[in-house]
Length: 421
Image 1 (tube, rainbow, N blue to C red):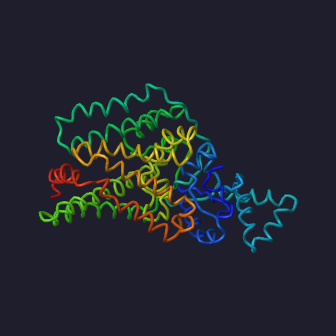
Image 2 (cartoon, rainbow, N blue to C red):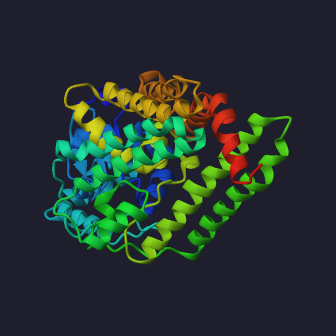
């Protein structure tokens, strides 16, 4: 049993929900404080150590909410709700019905019907008709991930810093993309595979390549929000940032970077997700409203750049979890993320080495603190305290990630090249 829930006096259990399902997330937020008063803590089922602890296939893992108790018991669906209900006096009539002949089966059938028919604004909670099968990647499949970054390094003396940054980023991305594609068995049709490899930045090949999973059509409001984020980013990048020059070059760089992130990650990638879902392909948005995260675990595990989360879980966390405690495996994942950012940030900038790794190490230690007894006692993973802690830890040391050498030597010259400054 994970050490984070062994102290039964402090916690009655972990309530696990699908963070890709809009209605599930809304219900989790609605009852978060009610459950906290009964010493229950909410966590996404997509949390890496939860996935490793349950050890279930993806489709089965997300089929129902679950309850993980300090005694090591796991309850799913209606059984989980009834077990949670033992801590609420008003659920007594329901628990008595469940004790009657066929009463529990009635609750289970009702829960399964609701789970099958749930709908989400993003279309991400539709359950696949058949489970996705994975295969073991071969050593040869790692070749692009080794060869492409090596080729980018060879080209470094001949490239401008910003061009080398994009070359290295694309090399790492393409190598990782190929690995996720090779995980799927049997291989899907060629047209869908080509679309996944060339026209979608996400790393969840199982969802994108599932021909039987038809997502809900996106709503007009989601289209409007995606367009608004793109326009906002463009305004920050091409209209606002330049006003900080020449007096405040670092401020110009930061404003422009925020604008670029909105244009690319929050805007363009969201629009691409909408286009694919409109065409019947389950392309889940990479950013899942990160500002709504009330814990660092939720922020990094289910809301910020879900493409990397999927990759890190399958190729780093899960293998390490077999030989190391969850906290150690998680810290290794964050350090690895820091090293990857060194290649894309510090190496092109020719300075600031070690700062991106320090930033991501701080994120991992923040999660360890949040999950500790002191962190739970202070409420660092719940409500407004959890949200504040998340903002402070992620945004406070952000200058370690995007350090001054990167701003001066890579970002500002790139903005000049694209006409933003």
